[in-house]
Length: 282
Image 1 (cartoon, rainbow, N blue to C red):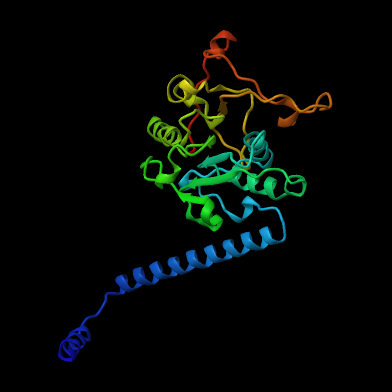
Image 2 (image 1 turned 90 degrees about the horizontal axis):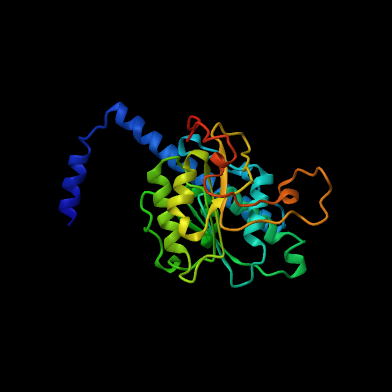
């Protein structure tokens, strides 16, 4: 064995890497180290905030537009999180698919004094997300690639009562594969709540095909994004939300307005016709 090692060492001494190859290797290792450092920082921050009961913030997760990442405004994310939690019990399982800003607000609400301090039940949360930065949430994080809709841990099949999904791209392929994942994860007894947030141009596909059997319709709620979005964005669901009791007249917050479900073909019935789909930014 010693002779073989010596021979290999002699041959290896004659090898030289080109300058471009060395630069590529240096760049690769630098990026790898930077990602590891960023992950460690995010993990430490998440753990510290949790220990101190400090609100988590999406500011720690910079949007990557190349990955079609457009975070909701805090108001929208909080409102959607509240709807997923309304009426939930300890046995309720909630899946968040490609909507990490909603997941963060779910965590904030469940850790708040108004929830945890009152001894209210904490449902089980699971985030399905392509961005590995969110692995800081440990067991609540599952890597997800919409292109492989069933490449998920077997225990997630038929495990969820409530789901929110925001597919990353405005294409029939992406929307359909995300819907396959949602169907696969829902409990056979039927979902309590489904929320799908995506572009206006996907309305017929969402309501008349992908989720029609679940009674999903276009809602009157309009999701907002923190940095704006050129696409007209809709919220679709299979349930309505009553306006908050005691809301003052003229209060325009989502909680004060709630949402109702629109009829199929509502645009034509209202005389406006279908809007022209804007250019996608995703």
